[in-house]
Image (cartoon, rainbow, N blue to C red; front, top):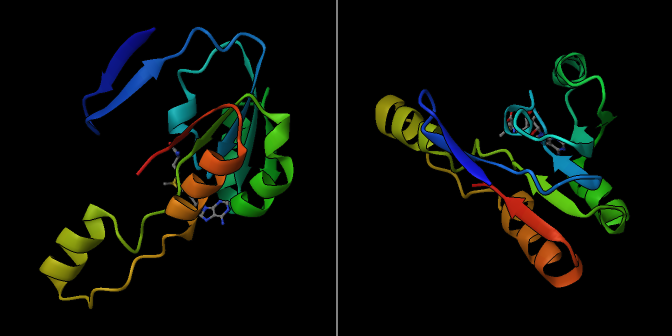
Length: 136
Ligand SMILES: C[S@@+](CC[C@H](N)C(=O)[O-])C[C@H]1O[C@@H](n2cnc3c(N)ncnc32)[C@H](O)[C@@H]1O
């Protein structure tokens, strides 16, 4: 296993070599930033925005891409996968909203939407037998 750091974002990526023939579910796949270092695995990605899913599909033509709701998909299909990665959206609670929106521009703070984060964690911890990551 190898760790790399994206110097622009400060995000550490772990290069996973052990996913040979693994079935991976990539939830909230966006443009596939987290998917870039995955090798030798079958990936199904779920993204609900058509335009974003199209860009993802062009970058990773070998992946299956489902255009739809991530929570609905994982609830019905989690048993089909060995590894699940999720990057839930964070517009209600991300540092950008807090620092730029609330502190910088005077936006009103909102109660964070946590189903896609903690709801998913509780679901996977309780029902999913494989390995998983939910990034915050
Ligand atoms: C934090 S971004 C994902 C970033 C991605 N991991 C990457 O590295 O490029 C969250 C993504 O989830 C998508 N999204 C938001 N709500 C969704 C939902 N209910 N189902 C599926 N995708 C959703 C957004 O359109 C956005 O592309």
